[in-house]
Amino acid sequence: MAIETGDTAPDFTVGSTDGTEFTLSEKLKEKPVLLNFYAGDFGINCTMYMTKFAERYAEIQDTGALLVGINPDSMDLHESFKSRVGIPWELLHDKDQEVSKAYGAIVGPGHMTTGYTNREFFLIGQNGKVLWTWKAPVPKTLPDLDELLAAVREALQ
Image 1 (cartoon, rainbow, N blue to C red):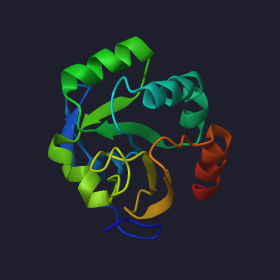
Image 2 (cartoon, rainbow, N blue to C red; image 1 turned 45 degrees about the vertical axis):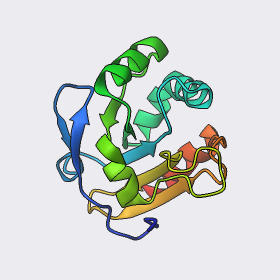
Image 3 (cartoon, rainbow, N blue to C red; image 1 turned 60 degrees about the horizontal axis):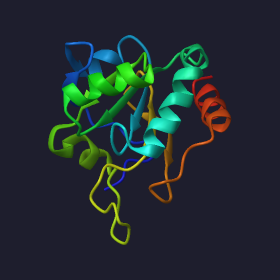
């Protein structure tokens, strides 16, 4: 079941590259969260758009949202990916795709990557409600960063 705008975001606790556990409901006490599901560390498309995000990280921070990336890759792989690509935000370990499944962020049948975590974004307000979503219509589709930033800014006004 996919999570849509207006739904209550499923809470979760997972490991984070900052060395602590990340609990969504706790982070929401600080600021809105922009949850970025992506297929895998070091994949061609994921590396390309994460590099572009890193270059524009100050703009993402200026929206007021906390960006975090999440997929089932190991913490060791996340750490290596962060270092190699220059990612300044937390990456979260979605063991067994439990969070991906809770959000419906799984590639559906008919694609070569069926069952993988899909490229999706969920902007979650401090009240725990989903304010905005973006889902790759085809797993290789990348979001337009200008449109993504504009949508996040608008949703947080």
